[in-house]
Length: 408
Image (cartoon, rainbow, N blue to C red; front, side):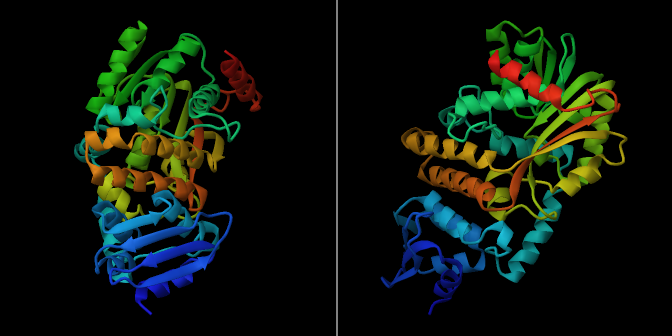
């Protein structure tokens, strides 16, 4: 039995995977299961099996991107779901690279975590300065590129993203006249929402030149450019004091060596009675490393922190944690929508880039959704203040304000 066959025989128990090797030999693993679609793949060249055995995720990704791993029944999401669903995080069995590659990856990830200011802008540009047309094809109308909030799993993406903004705004406990800092403002949707709903003045900062052009244009078109401003600046260089700070989907790019500096800077910028809301992807359990496919092709320098790493980042700053929420499967549901829209827009994406990029992007989305559905990824929302009396004594105000915002 080939090594890849032994590997798959141990892994695939639920659902059925049929593999056709480069020499024409066929092997079938697992058994039909209603939880998974049956998948059939073919290795188009002899070296594919070895690449996957040595480095499962990266080897499979690159073989798929290069057209050497062909999916003849199902699609890449079905394949990823089948493999990750058979190796869930809670069971403790995962598809791991060979030991020498794990050592090499660990060293490289330690280097990548040192996300100094001079590297941050380059890392951001690698992902966020892709064509705006790409993101418009699969995101919601407001270009929210972060986890939505599903009060019902069947809600459409636009509603879930609107509910996410209401959920965050309610936790900020905004009052008219407040000044808000949005760290990692993306295409400006959150900043524009906070101003529209509460009248707050908002400064959004980003390192993405492509995003800031869109954000500024949106503020001009809405007639609020004097109240909602955007700057191309590293958060470390922001000056002033703000009644509220919000950061959604940016902390993943900070890097563990800089968590303390990040929270110290936030405390410096926060007014004495200020409130901060951090929304970030995180990992359950202990700290880990970012998978090599993601750092190589998607988010260089990116890392999703364990909750313990977030806590260690702020615990010496005299910031007070006033609320922590764990969003468990919301991002899986979000990415399901992104994946479906990406597949529907295949021709446009191939025209923008090429087939290889399209396959890379679908692999990224399929793997990301699986990480939140079967793996160890969640989203954390951490509320912090400088003053223990800055917020009401109970969480009731969050629920009341969220209902008001959603109703409005």
